Length: 471
Image (cartoon, rainbow, N blue to C red; front, side, top):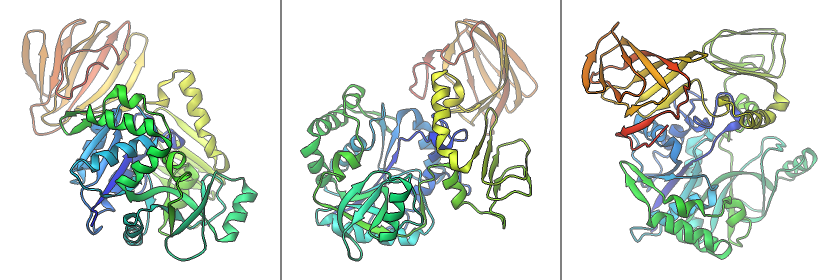
């Protein structure tokens, strides 16, 4: 019997939940519901799935340390953590996963799951997976259709043949207008397209080969030329970048005559917008869902999130307010899909708020941009126990370091020395230097940069335990 290998896709950018979700820290890494991130929750709901091997994770190379750290926090060890050098949509990512899963000679059933969805009834979900596996082992490509709870225009729909349980797909349809969506829901024959699938690895590749043979060829080449880097499997950049970019829906599911769907009602939500998040979080008696330091008076159906500052709402209805360190979003719930236009404008203007939070996570810890001005910048830096920054130098800036907590081991030129709390040092422009935390508690320090250019790309690395080059 074919084993089951879950495939978790973690390559999305999540711009529709800006400003909380950014390109460098997208929504799958956010704890939107409870203490665990969506990625961690995706992994954890697979516990108790009979016969399932360790999941295989496909992630964006830029997020590799975040993925590894979040999985480590929940005691997770992937069978492989495959890094995409560039995003090419879901069809090539799944092709690589299928090829990797077949390396040992098996032909497993792949359970393909996005890493950024919410599923409330995990027992019902696992039961549906077991049913879908039987059809998958019979050679069908099975998708999970969500029983609609409203006439949503933000989802694609699946038109299913009459019957119970797994049944044939009649057609996939694009996101409809409101009137069409209402017709679909009223008919009882249409289900939301969840983006979750189950099929034999060989069957997926066979169907993909019929329509996109070049994609399969380049996916195989990128895997054959992949390199192992610590816990990561890095796909060959040249081969994978040349892959046609396409979704599994367009490349395979809409073209095969062996597509089936299993309708499920499991409390699914793709958290694709702020209004979608509002619909699944806990609300008060007036429909308000608030997190952080929020005070509201005479408000109804509002969503308010504050990282740190007090947010006060008075007399508002159907409003979303999301406050972060460096950006504030206020929108009507009917217009939250337009957040992507704000992000596009930020990218056109090359503004960092499209990509970065003020607090930036690195494999060694994090830094928070506290203040900046003409020729200076102030950061709060946290280095994890036992971690070290690269041996580096800067062409355009000097740095002052003041230790606030813990002990720092500092390399500056030929000198190596320790700094304790309330001690400081100066790193001249052009000096080779490194910051390490030799202790067992987090190292916290304040860094004051001064110079004519303070960009993060002014880093020349000489040694780095994380395999980074520059930036």
